[in-house]
Amino acid sequence: MHYLVSCTLFSTIIFNFIVSFEPINPYLKRFSRVNFNKDDLIKNHERTKRDIQPFLELKFSAHEKMFDLKLKPVKSKFFQKDFIEIGSQEVSIKDFQLYEGHLADEPQDSHVTGTIIDGIFTGTVKSKQDGVYYIEPAKKYNEKEQNSIVYHEKDVLSKPRTRRSSEDADVGCGISKDKIREALLKEQRRFGKQV
Image 1 (cartoon, rainbow, N blue to C red):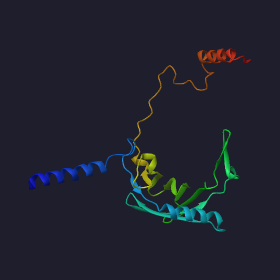
Image 2 (image 1 turned 30 degrees about the vertical axis):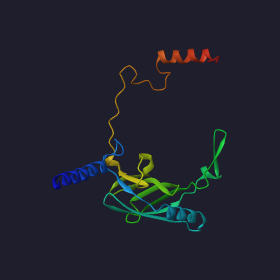
Image 3 (image 1 turned 90 degrees about the horizontal axis):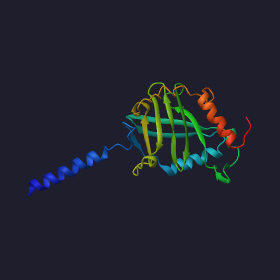
Image 4 (image 1 turned 120 degrees about the vertical axis):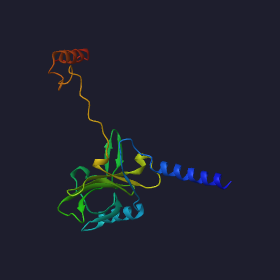
């Protein structure tokens, strides 16, 4: 009986260990889970909109590194209104804000860009010393326990782009080959367009 309980317990531990390291995406070799305090982030995000000297600080630990982001809102000519038009609908962007800044320990040799949406920071941290880190919402990867994931550029697995067949390798703009040019002209004529 004692042996059966020990085997069951051991099997459960091994199963939980394996499941906890199951990849969240086939293209990510390694990542860190991060949980920002959403309420604090939203409160600080709202405060930066009103401050004369707006400044946002975000600290977290990932990949055995302490990240201390110093961020300022980006003034953009693209977002002068509180909404954007998508088709015939107006979508509110009053809570949308781009941020730009640096790492506290690398003020001259780092660059951080991102945004805060629904209390979650999404962005990129470029460090001369450590390379590029990406911060994304965990819900994008169906993660429910933490609200963000952080991964390094070296942890992205991607296959090299496959080359096109030699016949269409240099297609380019479409009018560089007679066959394609004729097909495009035929389509234009079909729709009554003059060439």
